[in-house]
Image (tube, rainbow, N blue to C red):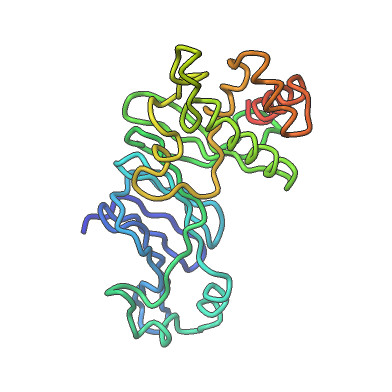
Length: 244
């Protein structure tokens, strides 16, 4: 198919294909040729790719998905130790390369992603994957720095999925279907998993709706997290400040 992106580091070439996701290629010095030693198990219509490290690539497709794939450590070591860049790559799997990358992140944005880059938006700020879409939206995915933050925002998102009207209906006596409208107009988890199940990404747009809830609902969710509403709002603010 048509190649849309090419990245290089050392003897490796990372190729983004218009309809077949990302290929990991190694230069064979002995035969002066390129060998495809790893690829993705999912066919993806790639619109943008950025390299995160030697074994990890982030990509986006035209259906609004952002993903991160990583070459397994043992495979990376075997490939680097092979002096000829060939030998173990003779037997293909699933009509593709010998090895397959692991999908470690999956997230549906909802718009066609035109490109993405690894950037720091402020001096001394955290690295983030910045992406832009066909309709002009600009977004960012930033990594968590501690396990505590991961647990906190995972539970906050879980509670807000109900508070945002995706799961928990109000009783008929209240006169409203939900206590807070969903940000996407449908089940949030199903939306973020539109093409592939969402994996290891916290929906920041959903978490930001915490401050829009009524005070009683904020207090209820904060108590479930063993925090006060002010502490939850401070956590959200700290995450924004780390990026911006």
